[in-house]
Image (cartoon, rainbow over all chains, first blue to last red; front, side):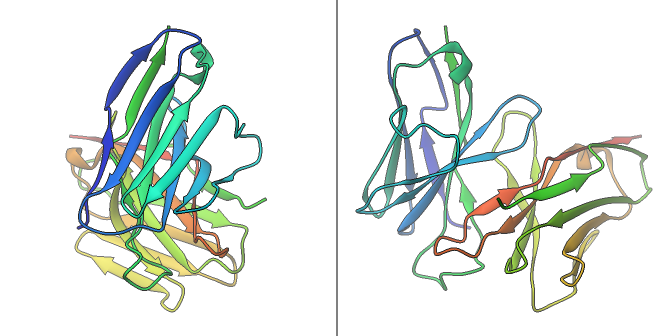
Length: 119
Length: 113
């Protein structure tokens, strides 16, 4: 299957600093990528949809000024957690679909996730 | 908003027994229903998916059934093995222009030898 690479896999940062997470589709192009957050023993909660060349679409309750998303190319989306606080500590996962296949009903590929710990 | 409910939240079975996990969804326009297996600290792995034009799909010990009228779908694992122990998530695609996936709440499956 297609490969989605996420970096870093783990990061520890101090409260008040910002952290950038990268999501790359390695062998396909993705006009749309998705960012999820997963707290321990909970489900994947969709945070936002990243759209290449345009603004991201955020889910209800997700602060767009805190979670900055940039999708500057067909293979890269970044999520920046600004002014991070301990409650932002979580597992962040991106996913993407191959836009050269049929746009609908195709498998979503996931990055390996980023474990963020804010101290 | 869109919602996917999943149950049970935990499921314990003896090795060799069958396991069934059920999900219901709210968006009647959803057409794609994948199931994922997630081990601790890892990314979700697709194990099987079904599209709305079929009612059932099987892949070796794993099968999924879909009832579009009732808006529910189920995962069936037969002849369970200890390595099947993990958290399983169902998901449904939301029919906006992005086809984003909304996940169920998850089922922790434990298979005892």
